[in-house]
Image 1 (tube, helix red, strand yellow):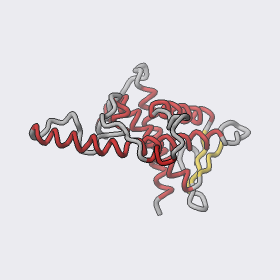
Image 2 (tube, one colour):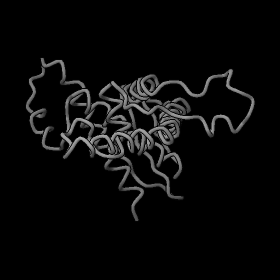
Image 3 (cartoon, rainbow, N blue to C red):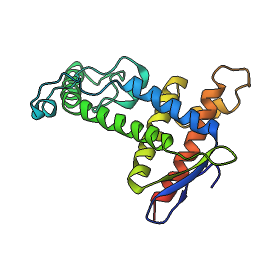
Length: 201
């Protein structure tokens, strides 16, 4: 169990985490929450349907991490279009899709990150430090999505656009300022992979 998820009875998963690992994951989840942004304002209209039909943004985010988390639905906007007409059509479709989906996507990612924080905060420390994290099937799915979002965010900061890009990062010297982020990226990938294994029959 140390360092990787294992399946538990009832379809959940468990992993042993030390205090440093717990702190790292929680800190990253909090940073992800701050990046995604707050939920609906407290002074929102009393009408419960108002939020449901509220329009989302139509422009892609400027931050590269948010662009990775909320990509264009109709292709990469930085890719050269086949023609001006196709470019205009693609932008119109992407804007319309984003308008009706991004708010829900943000809410889902926010809830998954909160689930990570809540489960870590509810841990009972072991006598020798650290704790055993035990997840329900629902929590496992939330963790899986949140781990993926964390890796996407770190990957965007590191400039990783394809799996081949990680080969260069393996050889970074210890004094390179990117080294801690690279180690976190690889470690989260290992956690994600073993958690997927607990969810597959």
